[in-house]
Length: 365
Image 1 (cartoon, rainbow, N blue to C red):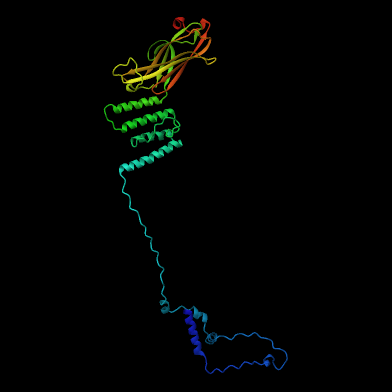
Image 2: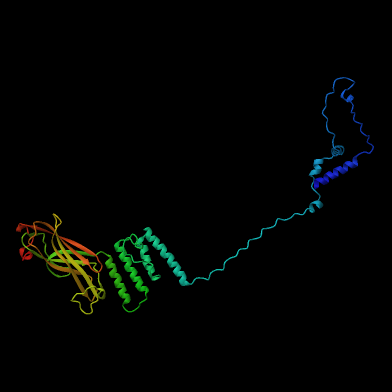
């Protein structure tokens, strides 16, 4: 708009500057005489014609007006003020509808939620083999908060058992039973003591049962016997001896849980030990079982918890044994825990009586 007004001004100036007394232009010669000059016959050289200046350009030249400067001039303030600038509309924020907040959870719900999360994490760590015993023990402790957190671990391949040893599984199961018993809240007199005692007994069962055996001439008590240093016995004569066996880490159960009681049980007895012993004489040369004393059960009861246990069994080796080396295998089984252990006593049968290592009065009938 500014440029249009400038051009209008320039045109107006041109109109004012034109002279009314200007003479009219000569008429254009349209005859062929214009093609020759001076009456000659040669055609005139064509000279390029320059278009005449426009009225505006003539006015600019006459009045020395700089058209470009005029065009570059800024519009008057009045004109600039008349231009209305339309502002860009601002975007409107979207309306967000929020759902109402749920009511706060109770303390019991939060504890249960956290317990489930911790149980899942501990089971995952047990399965990955990272600190399996510690993780399984932590799971057993969770039984006090949420029963059923740690399933009883029976076999090494069980899902919750993980890569644990037999001893570790037994310890964890015993601890789990203790936690479950304490969580029941039974505060009757003696209940907590019984739980602690059972836990200690379970820990003992978790450790492998061990035995030591020897041939003896006489036994008077635990650790009290006359050893019979028999390495050789004479062929053709029956040999008699006493097998003394010491048992450690044996299981003791409350007498009400024992499967079989000894006839010597007295009223008031609280604890029972259930073992069995088997004897086998194996020939070294061919592995043949030359003699055997079948498994014999041993059940003893007592008022107090026992810290030691021993077995005494009198044997008579047959006179028909052939010459050679033998192994007297003593096998003891704990019928309460299912564990067993064995001990070996070497024996050699010889023909020469001078090679016998004991006096005949102590070995033979």
